[in-house]
Length: 298
Image 1 (tube, rainbow, N blue to C red):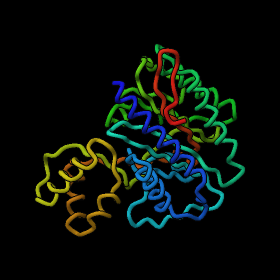
Image 2: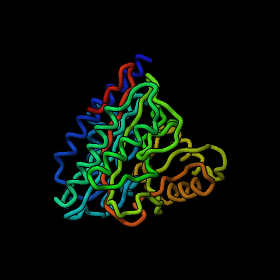
Image 3: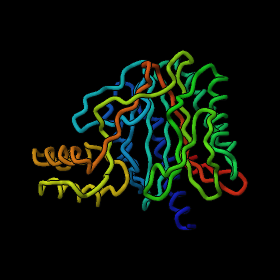
């Protein structure tokens, strides 16, 4: 376990450096594809691997948007942009997100999400209820005049498992789980306008996927592609552009669709705020210690 913590710490240090690089990107007018590739290449340059595809959420998009290989989307002026990314080192994952405001009118929402993150992290301790931290997030965001997204949560992380069962809510709830020493969590408050719906809904298509099973593929090409995906990405999420860009041909496209149809792979639909309201996000990964927690991505 000590070795695992060391690798989680290495992952977090890489992620922190990438986050500072992202803060300096001139994202106004950049293509979303370029942002995704810039982040993912930087992770590899620093010695890690992407734990999942870089997510770029513009305005009402809260999560799960990454560019397809031929994406032409440009980051617009006066937008609010969430960039969510992770690093894995031998399967040891850390996860972070920052929100970049291209409109001063949105700055206070960013401050609310970041303040909620800081207060939530300060409250983590072994034995504390997960729902208690959710209540702290909700109070912080509400105090700034905004509303939390109630159906998005932080999550426990284990080696090669990004979502390891236990969730950290962003509202006060009835979850009975507690933090335990040695656990690793991503804490990620989401804030939106007070008069918004305050929850996200799914929007298709999906551009992020995960491997589910080997069985079911009929064609040789689909079986070969499933074996490649399982070997290359294991249980971690991957982008369709990673697969289709490396193996861009009609047979690979057909095999990918076959794997979707027989549920050998499953997609993560894009998540958008239900009323179309702007959303801000902040996120760190923490290790629960005997006297509180340590931020691995600081």
